[in-house]
Image 1 (cartoon, rainbow, N blue to C red):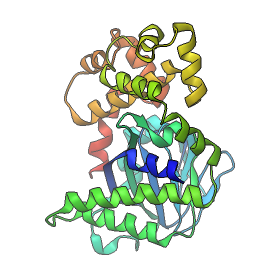
Image 2 (image 1 turned 90 degrees about the vertical axis):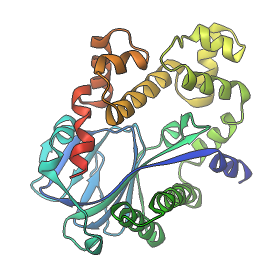
Image 3 (image 1 turned 60 degrees about the vertical axis):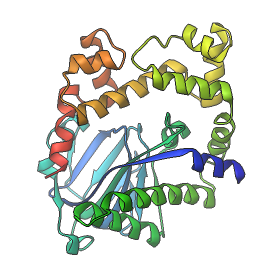
Image 4 (image 1 turned 30 degrees about the horizontal axis):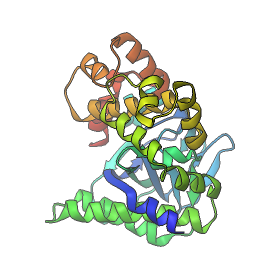
Length: 307
């Protein structure tokens, strides 16, 4: 348990969004993907996910780790089948954001949604690094209550709002990890993480990648950082993390690109170069391949979800 405490203490948690959403029409997103971790609290209606269309019960939560490609259905019979690109580009057709605090949890076909980051050593996406599938959190009224409180704080203009949101988001992340441990979910993967997060050479690699994400991150460079041979560094990284270093680096670059698209007015060419792609066309191809939508359309996400 001490190892898990160390992981939790090392986590940097960042709140991204919390909203109460009214579903306007049933949809089935056949290839939903997001770099952000999402917790969806079903108030009233239907949500299902995965190839077997596993259903979420009212009052329960669906946790979708960042970087996971899944089939996701909001609503019941007659759902329109769409791609993630269509969903991101046309959210206003499917979702309406409810900003009435008094009506949180009371509307038909509605759900709360929280998105957040949780990074170890401010570098490694914790839940993505576990490589775990989406799962349902059942019978957890305290966590559901905290989600609703976060949504209410986000809507409000009370003094100290940002401080409360930060504390409650951290509480949510700890509760999700506790739920995983208490129900013995993905224990082997958690144990592996607790081992490799203590390896100083791997920590040096993670830190270097974060610091020089737009630069040369070849295996030769990483081998020098970890003081191992170039032939061994890829095997070493994958042995501890379950992913080869170049795949990890590309995921980090795409996550940074998404953040820049959401928060800056830099051109796609500038963003591609900043995250390490000299060829803009290649960056755009890889972006769409990994995230399912063109980079230019990603900018619409934030404005549509702020309706």
